[in-house]
Image (cartoon, rainbow over all chains, first blue to last red; front, top):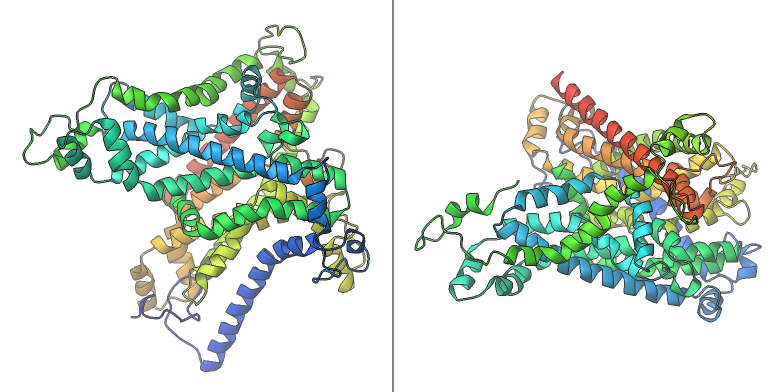
Length: 301
Length: 317
């Protein structure tokens, strides 16, 4: 019997797994064509809207809703919309871009520092109350996030963080996911290196920063990418805690852009492109980490 | 899962050291010093808010009033009295959330499985296609919302443009009338999140032992029989996980309706989260909004529990 590995290019096997290669040559090639046709249709469905967004952003605003509306080639090809985004003060998209970048990086760095320290203590150190603390932290993963919306709004308001990036950077770093994720990873690391470092006279902080953190680089990279994506894309929270135009992040700002520009779709799509490009680049670079972390979440469930 | 340091020690302890001595050594305060930065954030923005929310829901909490008097369970009871201030709107929004969940979950559970079965085959360019199908998920709801509002707009929208090209001139009101608005919201959610569920299924498929398929081949099973008797049973835990996660995600729907339909027509697509955010963060009546969020949370927890039970009893039979 053949295995999956034996037949790397066989696309005629049944959809549920490796199958005996049956059928005549003709029916095999028909099935092969159907398979690639399905793939092609799926690719068009998922990629075409994104391409349409980019194409529209380079169209002439007045031409876009008339003759040129359904053309896949912008005629004339123009960067007017991007220029408007830079020069028009009422929707400072590039300011929002910087705000989003700052908030995303700040939030990610904060999460990496506090979560890795806490995860190290929970994975490696022994102390009274450890089980209780870990249990409480993990238990909150199951609370739906909208429960925190109203109380956190009031807490952030008490801290004087309304309409400031602190509201986007700090509160979500209290989430339990990163601690749980890193704690599981630290537990799989071999102890021998840490023990050797201690014998050489290293204290816990040195062991943590010099031994554990370098070994945990893949897990930290994954957590960093996921945290940044989540923060960059967050919508519900920023639209209510940020108010004034220069202080918005991109998702909150895009909503304003939509109401201000109404049917100037090239302009709106240019704003959407500005918000998409960084995460798409990040996804292309860190594709494996993102997809594997999603894949692994299901195997535990 | 919760292997303590003490339990794990003997297996890893070096030969030259007493087996039960905690190594590496650390001061009593050290673990807490490592924990403090995170615990401050955890207490401030997770643990305390979870309790503080209950306190808010028991008060006539109005951000704009000078004081917030205690009013017991009134915020909850008003939701269950037909004359209650928020009762009609709240249950309306719960109904909208229910409709969206019922309409979206079947597609979000089945279509990604089909896509996962396709990518699970070996063919050139597999990694590329996997990434292409997943790509929309890395975009935020703001981008997806703006994009679909444009694609579906009656004026200049490419969807109605193509429909006209193939001879359908009815120009469906995708975002302003029912049932079109629901179709649009479900379709854009499928486009946006299909890749996420597909990747989870794909990992589940790759976890099923190839020997099971070989055994089925020996028994002369066809494709459908193998799917029915090997693939589906093998995916059971993953299916439960995807189903639970998808129900929760759909019940949390906010951005799509907020950006694309804005609740139209006549608030019929206004979801529960939209209602909570509107009452609590636009009308500044936090007491009522907090009460609503706990009711929604309890409903979701009950649904998840029923879900787990149904799947467990299915497994026994």
